[in-house]
Image (tube, rainbow, N blue to C red):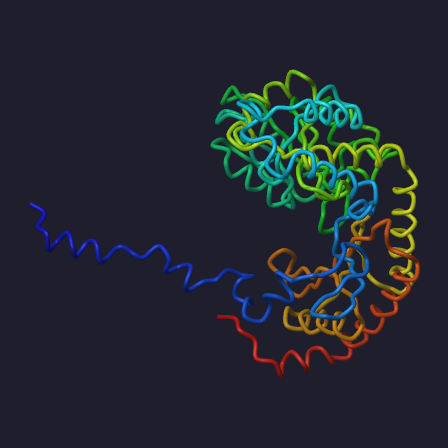
Length: 431
């Protein structure tokens, strides 16, 4: 018989859920006292664009995903303002399935589908939650998922929802892809399920395109369906800007195409596109949209204007690539390692510790007026510093030359140990 005293004793033995959180802040959180407000969660001020303010100082900004410079385009600003004046921020209220459906949502879906050469499209409120929910809706516990080990966090989190088997392959490695497709095929024959293969059109950290053409070719040998996250490819790659699939001549082989509005479209929202029967299925089974408020009219109407500009003004993409080529060629000519990027994403790889990286970025911002994203372990291997730049159509050749000069200066300080000495003299919180 359990006594009250023994119950209380058991109660006190149960570990407090928050104990782990309080004792282990995580690989990034442990730097919070030094990093927050400056290296992470920074506050940029002024109109979005290459020139903004940070901590009261003018900076040259390479950290916005506004590829085509649409964020401050006068026609975009006008369309957003007129939509806000006409509809307010709330309209439509409710989920689309119940009360939030409009002609504008349907028009945007038709235009997006046509733009990426698919039969149908479906709007999503947010890219991150949308692709997670799409993965969840496309597979059952009997199905097998095969995905790139370097997939974006939203894909990884979507795969975590999967109650069946999943296999990861080495990043962009064709041999590893095929090996895991063989494993998935064997498993699917046992479970009676199918195979969902997931990759990205553009990997946002390193800038490589996913090997879509080769993956589509594998369909001749293995029976699987292909989901592609093309957030960084949409609007930047392909003859018309339809993305990495168009760039590689294999758009037809992509079964479910996904992209967000948070990059080239400079807004909020996302969409899925594919054959009509698949999109119809997702409309009625995508939990993140069925049970969530519809994309507001400000974003919906604004997206129509952005898509029109993207579609009708190829000069925007031309200017973007003029800047991309100037920046990347300039870096390579100066001996910088930018990996094997073949997209707009421009990574610069340097060797150094996290404290050295923090000192270097501080120097870049305070003394050279250059603001960019810093990526360190655990996102990339220990001992490597990745400085990630996003060129846009709004940057100028003068911006690029200024940045190249600054990079030469900081590399010298990193190599000669200047940053290491400053880092060693600084108290670092790693608790």
